[in-house]
Length: 435
Image (cartoon, rainbow, N blue to C red; front, side):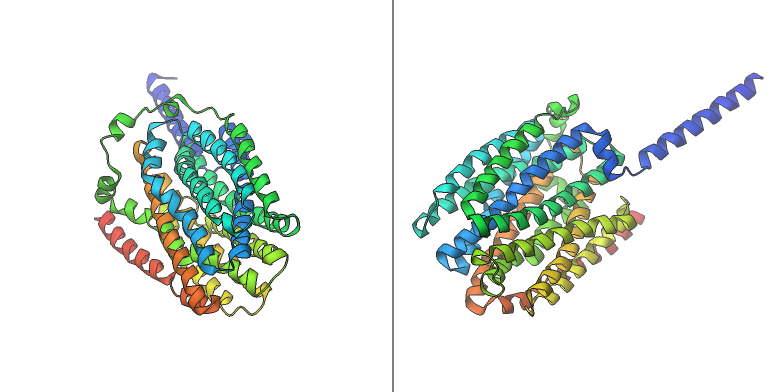
């Protein structure tokens, strides 16, 4: 073989090798494959499974306890408002911590602290102890405000680029599945054995989650604050003003909380307590509603992702569709015709909300730089919790004035607003990027 032929052959081999590597990078990893081949993500995911199971035990138990002790929609709204407002207060600090400190250590420490706080819930026995429940809930959800940005920011640290979309979708689906199982089992547990048993189980799950997260081995670049020297010069607000697309993406979870999900959760408690009562104070019927909501929010993104993959444009288009599907679910629920129809309506609503939630997260994971990623997710979480607090307070107050059915009808058209605004922004964004 001549030198020219050998050079041509080597060039061809390099081209083939380059194309092969490119195909490997672009190949979407399967859900079971990532659990089998990526031990770091597997431990992170396992901790999420256990922790979320307890979370939904707590939410069901706290809501039922408040409603049974006070008989007040406003008091219930205060609980859900605390659930949102406490993380909002710590979110700016939490985002900085997620960028400056070891994200794995943040997750473990917050799990341990939350497990210890759950012990205090056992001392809430009557209406005079409601202040204690509110105080503990404030501390619990405040600590959770450190957990969530770190959990979102660590995902690219433990996955490769072609695993990221799969990891995000699987994490979101796990949240939904554990909502389904946790809410259903939590409702049955609270309905049959009382709310304090549910609190005990919740506390134990946090300790088990911490043990699982200890097994994660972060890469050296993620184990320290490498890259933060550059990132420290960046402010989140300044970065978002210079990158408005990132800013608008961070608004989606706030829109979901305000217009589609948080107020609806308060309404579900009233529906279970006053309209379709199964179990003590409707605990089982509430668990069933939360259960099917979790199933819907898990199915929606998984099915839609077969069409979108991890491609930017389909992900963006599907977000508006998600809001519209959520609106349809609210229309089905509002008449309160029967418990099966209410559950089905909640299922459809959660399909739409799940699509908008997961795909907006995926866009941030793909576009937010590592050195400021924690602060971006912290800002997103702060906006989400603030709008969730506003929604739960308003819905709790409005239910006392007008009843749950009127409130539900008023909610039916709200998700159309972010769907329309996002569609308008996408038209503008497409024109700007094409020039």
